[in-house]
Image 1 (cartoon, one colour):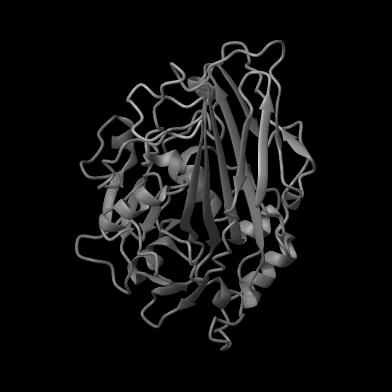
Image 2 (image 1 turned 135 degrees about the vertical axis):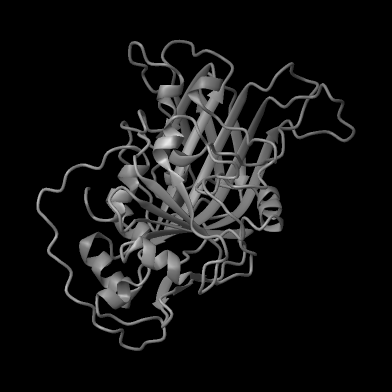
Amino acid sequence: MMVGLAATAMAAAVTPVLSQQNTQTIARYTMDAGTLSGMAAMTQGGQGGGLGGIMNMMRGGGGGVAHELTLRLGSTQSAQGSPAADHFMPQGAGLGASVPLVTPSRRTGQSDDDSEPGMPGNAEMPRGRLLLFWGCGERAGAGQPVVIDFARMARGEIPPGLFAQGLDLPEDWQVMVSNSTTYGDWPNSRSTASLTAQSSLLGAHRVVGNYSPEISFNLAEDFMPGLNPAGIDLASGATRMRWNHLDKATGYYAWSIGAGQNNGDMVWWTSSSSQSFGGPFADWISPAAARSYVEAGQLMEPGTTECVIPAEARAAGGQAMMTSLYAYGPQVNFTYPERPQNAPASWRPEWIARVRFRSMAMMIPGMEAMMGGRDTTGRQSRQADPAPAEPAGLPRCRGGLRGIAERAAGLCQ
C-alpha cells in the first residue's frame, strides 16, 4: 500500500484465456492471501500481538505470524434486487460457513475511482526532498543518493529514470468497482470474522451471488510461512537483514523509509540492484512476473536469505527506518469451463478465478540494539542511549508520502 502511494502499480500476469461458449467472461474473482510476520504480525494481532509482543520482538524475542485475505468479485451482470454474494469457506479457515462479499454504497458525487479498495484519497505530495538509495551491500554504490526535489515534482517536473525500470510487462488484471457492473469484496463492515495464525485455505471454495454464476474450486495451496526477519548492526554502520528461506518464494524485495536529517527530507532505500522507486512490489506478483523482475535485478533471487542495508542509507535515514520485506509466492488460476484443446480465439470462460500468495514482514533494523536486546547470533547487543519519551497525544498522520515519513519517525500516529 505504501509503495502504491508513490507510483502506479504495474504487475504482470497471464491474460485470461478466451472462449467459444460465451461472448464475454461474466465473472472475475480474486483471492489475495498473505502471511504477516515481524511488526506487521504484531499490529495485525498475530501470536503474541499487542504492545507487549512488539516490545518482545524488538528485544530479539522473535514473533508469530498473522494471516490476511482479500476477496474481490466483479461481474458484468446487474443484481436482481440488492446485490448479495457469499464465499463459502473450508472449515480450516476458521471464518464460519461463509463470509459476505459486500457491494460498497456510493456516496453522492463519488466517482468509481474514489471507491477503489485500498486507494487513499487526496494523497499529498510532500515538500522537501527524497534521498534515494538502492542495492544490497555495506556501502552505497557510486552516484548515491539521487536527490529528488518534491516541489519540482509537484509542478510536474518528473526526473527521468525516477521510477523503477524494467517494468515493461503487461499490466495485471484487477477486479475493481470501476471495471465491474456489480462488485463485492471482503473484509467489510458487515463481517466481524477474522483469520488466525492457524487458519488454512486448503479445501473446497464456493462463491454464490445474485449477480454472477456460481464459482467453485478446490484449493491445494495454503498460506506461506512467515519471514520473521532480524537485523544485525555492523561496525561499518550498515545493517545485515536476515530472514527465513521460503521454499515456494519466487523472489524477494525489501525497502526502507525514514525521515532525513533535514526537516522535510525523506530517505528511501530498496534492495533493487538499480535505481528504483515505486512499482508493483507492495502487491501480489505472479510467478511469471517475478521471474522477469529477478532477471531485471528488481527482485532478489528466490534462494536469497539476507541483504545488507548500506551504511550511508542508514545514516541518512536515522534509527527509525521502517523496513518492509516481501516474498512472492505461488499463483493458482481456475476457469469454467476449462479451456479445451485447440480452443479458437473466440473462446471465453464463463468465469475466471485467481488465488495469489505472498509473505510480508515489517521491522525497524537495529531496533534490537536500541532496546539493549540480543541479535540473531544470541550475543547481547550494545545498550543504546535511552530514547526520549514519546510525546502524548501525537497528531494523526496526514496522507501521502509525507505522512509515511512522519509515521516512520514517530511524529504522528
